[in-house]
Amino acid sequence: MTQGDNGEKGPSNVYTADTNQNVMSSLPLEHGCDAWWHWSQCHKSPEVLLYARTALFHPNWSHGTAAVRGSQEINGGLHYWEVQVSQRLFGTAVMFGVCTASARLHADSFVSLVGEDEFGWGLSHKGLIWHNGKWRHYTEPFRENRATTIGVLFDGKRGTLGFYKDAQWLGIAFTGLDAVTEPLYPVISSTAAKTELTLGATRRGWVSLQDRARHALLAALPQPRLLYTLPLPPALRHYLEDDLPPSKNSGRSPFLSLNKQQILSS
Image 1: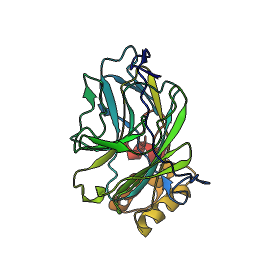
Image 2: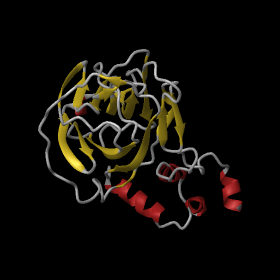
Image 3: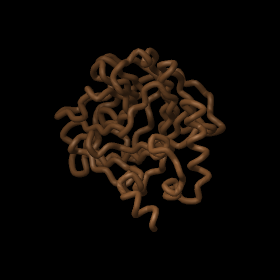
Image 4: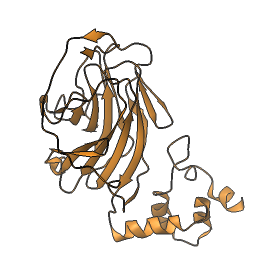
């Protein structure tokens, strides 16, 4: 039996698909670096509440479908992120994937929102993948009311999107995303009331040798604020600022909004 979107019992739905048994022994992009993005306060359904790295969907009662997207675009790069799913896993669709800025983030009905049109590519907890309003079997449906971790691997150069479930590689789900010209963002959605989806590891590959050198330089600083004590050209300092770690509260670097003279004198 499955449950409706507010937790009530509903008719059973059975899907079958083959599952690849490859289990990862280490985190994808282990030799990359952390990616400093978060769920966006500006690009979400009003039915999503954000606190720290957790998105709470339909905190009272579900009347439709809600989504939230990531704060940074991921086109062209190699990215991996994990979403930890609470035990409240049921309903029409809890989804994970990517979308463009044209994708809607709210619907007043219970739908598979990520992939309902050409602006999204998503995996549903029913084991189906969606794009352009069409679905196909991809993996076995997730066990309802059981906590799980979904890993998403996006290769912008090859244009592929694939998924892990509890460290098990499920295979490539989508190809051709390198042809997408609009910015792409991570996205999650849910129809189920009181679903909690928490952003776990966020990793990215190196874009260039310069990118790797930037990360190594910042990692060598005892404190990020020491960046402003270095005699650097403004353009180089701005480039380094873009990779500063976020604050615990805002998801952004706290140093970018402070007066540099105050930092230097502290």
